[in-house]
Length: 540
Ligand code: ADP
Image (cartoon, rainbow, N blue to C red; front, side, top):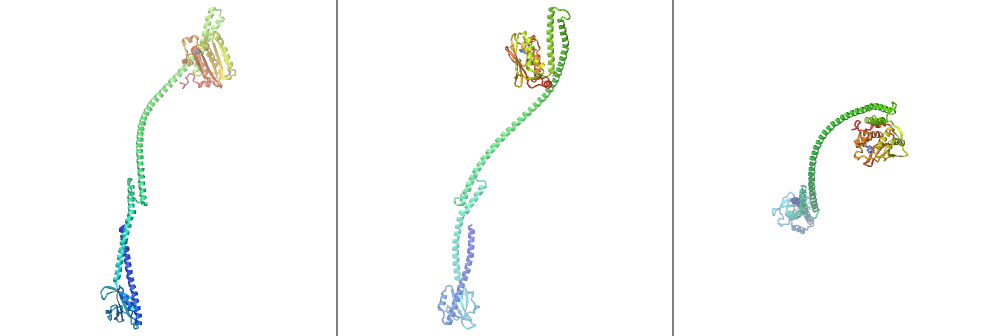
């Protein structure tokens, strides 16, 4: 910077000195031309007035830069000169008798130094004769002036140079250096050195900029440390997640293996199940076959038994009526026993037939509109004679407004008779049996309550199974083979109802069954839908 200033200053000074020198020389020459002119005019005026202009020429002579002056005749003789020694001397000069001012380089005749010679025409003398005024001037004055100017210029230049150096120094200190420092700082910061602190203490814009840079690097440092912390946390989290993920992968691999093994097991189980299912189906088919064979056998046997049974009954009755001859009282009693047992046998055969029909789904139902009240009343009346034998009172409580139901009346009567006859059978002499029929929600609820021996709780469901008796040894004495309730259940279910017992040992039992209020129009169809004994295809 300083070097540039010096070079430019020197150039400017050089150019300006050259210009000043040349213009100064010019000015001096012009000034002396004027002097020569004034001198010429004074000489011309004095010559014509016969007064020699001593004063003027003396003044000219005293002028520092004037070395000599001559008034030269046309023939080259010096008429007058500042130095009297030159008077009358002859000169030979090409500019002698010039009609216009000539300025030229020459050599001083006294000292031999280089001079400027101003040759100026003088209009005196005869016509056609041209006098000449010579003025020798020293170039030293010009050189002096120039030297002075150079000295002045150099001085000025030095002053300027000092000022420039000072300004440059100041500029360097206040602007360039801070900018360099700032640049270095910015570079360091941009390369990631956030610890770098730019040291500029000036209060100017650069100082503020450095401050801003320092603050910015501080903030950047803060952000970087936050970022580093965040990234560390992130790394930790990623590690944690990766670990968890690996654990999960291991777990899932284990679960997968476990699932595969379970699936394999399940496959084996499934195959086993399929095999078992096939076996069960086969067994089921076999069972059904057996069941059908059993039903067919029972059917056939029952029919076959009934025919001789009817014959036996007919003949016994005939004998008892003494149509075939008189019989004794003893014989009558014996025949009565035969008749009673025939009835029981007949009843058993009827029950076996019913069960086999229910099981095979071939029981015939004849639906008809039935007045419930009448039906229950009639049934109770039928049972009254049996109850009377044990002095048992049957109370019938039937709701007045009973709707008509489409049911197989005879079969439902069979159910009621079976339940009431059981109640009579298992009630003590002289006890009471309550028969009830009422509307209950969407059903007619039938109930037969006795105060007999009761049924243990764990057997209250089993008594509806075929051939089941609570105490078979004892119950058989009452007559029956454990079929009545199984048949009743089949008939009730076929009508869309339910049947169950509610009993307390020693206190008595109540048997309930329901019939739905809506008419069961197609009992046959309904019956086919219901798997009464779980023996229909798919029933097991
Ligand atoms: P059973 O013809 O043997 O009476 P049921 O199917 O009608 O066959 O009855 C099955 C068994 O239920 C009876 O043998 C008896 O043990 C029991 N049982 C039925 N009704 C009553 C009742 N009212 N009180 C006590 N026990 C009963």
